[in-house]
Length: 147
Image 1 (cartoon, rainbow, N blue to C red):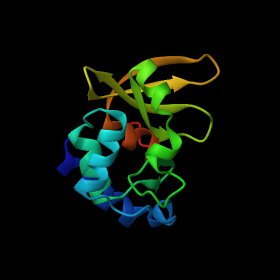
Image 2: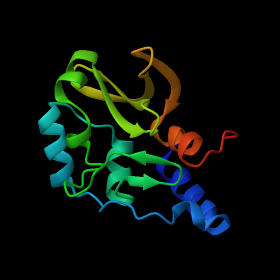
Image 3: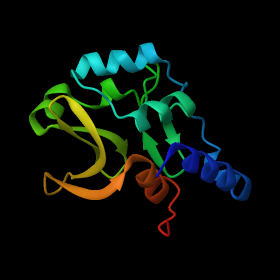
């Protein structure tokens, strides 16, 4: 899903069901804060995630939590994702489903791919969803599976 299509869908959903966006989001990111995250993990984040952080900020987003670049937030990515966990698994979680399961990006040669993997904490296993960042937000954050 492209950024423009995602933003249009968000505006439509906000008009139809504004209550799912009533929880306060984290502060919007700027390029400096995003670069701090990239430098900390030694990676390049996908364009879609960077755009999302600059547009929406992260934290609570409808029915899910998206780790943010807001270092004052309990959902700050660096405070929630252990660097060694990420490095060992070549995986950077950015969604918290508040069930113990996480979703995030596969890391290949220091670059996060835009396809989303899910970490199952009970099985300690990572599996591919076949979804990109925005489509994952639509499915899990907005709970729209018909996209």
